Length: 294
Image (cartoon, rainbow, N blue to C red; front, top):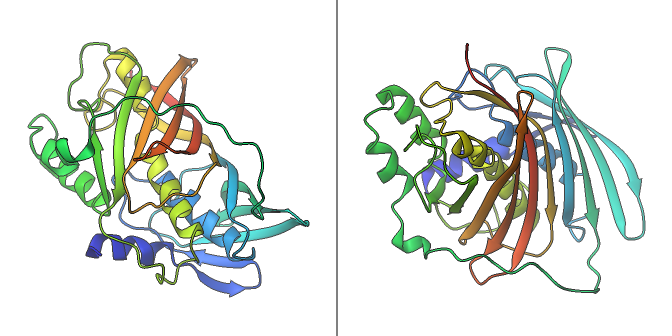
């Protein structure tokens, strides 16, 4: 396990300060707010710690209400909405400075057999043939060196490989609003991290990564490079995920992303995440603020 991955697991290991109340901290932010994937992952950890381990998460729906302050702790208040025979539902409110910054509803289900079908996995190159994110980023001379290093530090726990050039790598000409990224944790997970029991640990880590690139396809449609080059200001508004089949976050996952619409200062991203052997593991939808600076 890399030190960066261990640091991420430590970040997700919340402190329980009261029944149903947990406290988390933040890492240094690339932008002056808490990374949305971190808040979503920590909130899911808080919810998961109040649910029996034999009930994995099957969905989450979340709203980002205010920018998080990376210099202050985040308190997660869990409301135990329902404990049924098959399903368990939790609502989590993340609070900073006395105000809610994020809300999450998560549902957990005891395993049962049922109908089974899925959309086929799209074609994608083998991740081993693609340059690492570090290799790509270090070759971009147009990005401020300090921004580039902070970007690399923020993603050091994840081996994330773009199939094509990311928006900030080649911008100025519109492209198809579709992107593919392979990702896995930068190191193997032992299942004894102390954060949460498996399989929720893998779900939590996928939730963390899911907020990194989902809105990129919006930028591609307009030839924009994003915050890294300063031609777009953006932030996540809401986020939804459905966890269909078991997967491991330390094995390659294909994040196939597209944007069907952008309008009124907002853009929509939707995606499917597949295991390397073609199993549809996760569906994701997110809307975000996407504004062009005046």
